[in-house]
Image (cartoon, rainbow over the protein chains, first blue to last red):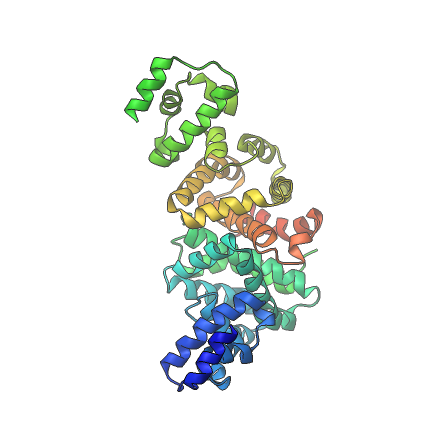
Length: 202
Length: 202
């Protein structure tokens, strides 16, 4: 690592264009895999990429967005998802979650979800990073705001239903769920998510 | 295939011991992968294994049990699961499903579930076989008996929650769900499964 960093420095910092963006993604993948989501710092990634740390915010809106693209290979920025979920009415959060996730996944034909699951079933480290990421940076913000108590357990319950929905719709392709329109899916599944977040779970 | 079958025939039928059992598992894996669950016949598998077709019932209780062991590599016979689920009171089916699946998976440390998911995320054919198998031979028997209507959609909803539960508990290992005792899991998840089978889903 030291050799590479020094070499990059000798070449000087890159400008703020798309090659900077790509350098950050490549460096981030290595640093996140070595250090995990929490251990990796924006500074370490930027140094490895040979660019200014401010470029992480510029291109990805922060460490989460960079992680989502570099490691989870998500074709959307989780910051947008969080924003949508935070703006939902408390008693509409179940329906909003179904609509947000299913719309996002449907738009990629489910390929992104399947790739993500393949990665976490094959690499323990990927599972750990996904967990840290969704827990500390997605679910915590959304669910802790709405949950009356016990929000960590509630967040894991929400995860069971979201992941299972994706597995059946995109990976196993069980019909009629796989082809059901989004309102049919929401009518069935939203009450489950709503109860997991704001209802009785014990 | 023909050469091998002829060779097996020249050697004569195997006796009914454990080598017969192993020969059936090996032959079944090939035939199921070539033909799919529905296309594969007990006769074709037995012929390929060079044993009498009655040995399939003797060792595996039928095609489903052989498939479960040869392809899904399940360390239990789905016939036992079906029997347990069929004997549940209708308003206790949600809790029975949680207890049956979680107990079975916990007993293998979740390794079996993870291997199954790795297989279906990596091989489309495995996903198709899993779907055919669970649909036509597990869910149909259990859910069609209890569901007031729309049992195929209900069965897929049940699948979302069961698969998601396994993904979060054994693959992603999200805490506190991953270490929660079975009664805590059942209290939270059983009402979901109960509604998916006997309640309102639209």
